[in-house]
Image 1 (cartoon, rainbow, N blue to C red):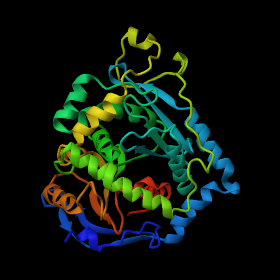
Image 2 (image 1 turned 180 degrees about the horizontal axis):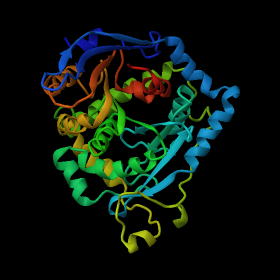
Image 3 (image 1 turned 135 degrees about the vertical axis):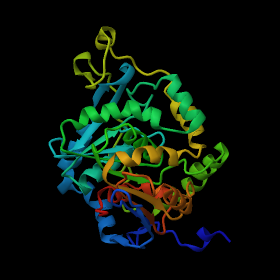
Image 4 (image 1 turned 45 degrees about the horizontal axis):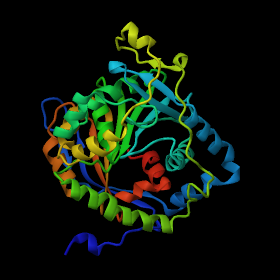
Length: 381
């Protein structure tokens, strides 16, 4: 019998979030092999903390903070990088903080969407002392499309390292204003985050935090559809039914309008050479944005490509990497990721790396803003 059938899913977070470390890689001194262990360390996020994150951000006492976050999402930055391609990002939380945390969305994520607004409000409440950077992917909002050669590379190989080269220039541009930079992402966003870090100067990113990265094994398009829309969709409905968080409608959140950036507000990533034509080119709305979401990404996610991307990214991280895997995910098998760690632990010049299983939960836990905010704000050291 499938082991998942014997485990109760904690839809209402009665047990909070229990994280069990099932793999731990400690870098060794030069000339000796890194140490791989399975120490079983437990980190507990209390049920009281989850309930707080579900309810408190929406109380009248926190109304000003909530409204500030929504206003920040209404005023994103539009940054042109490689090839003159424009990517829009929003900086939420404390823009004057010393620390920047980049958060990359899962499939179809868009920061103007009401659910993304809920996530943003929760993340800022959970940790108001950092600046969060959220990004609209290619063809979403005002973000331009990746070159066809990069789209082809994703579809044929499943690697997000080529795409990460374009996103990394945007992150580097924003990161100039901060002393410390952490990178994180969930689902497809974990793959994007890995591709970004693979293109960052070694040591520039302090921590990489990945929440249930996709592409850890070969899957058919049908298998992905059944796992994501069918099984995880059903799980999400059960999480929502038990949640104390207000829905987007109950919170009064609506889709934010997309406004084209004015030429004077367009930023140009430093370290990128632009032609006079690119410097003076007005904004053009992306065409056929659905191609990335419905053709490119689904094809790429059928490939077992996470491991190779991770091998490229890991040595670039200065302090630590944390991969969090819901124990009962319908898109991943935590044992597959553990085997990846066994194969990569001998890579030289890597930071401390941990795999944490999120006990009693599925991939859909990340669709609950309180859970997502808790995962991104908890101290895993």
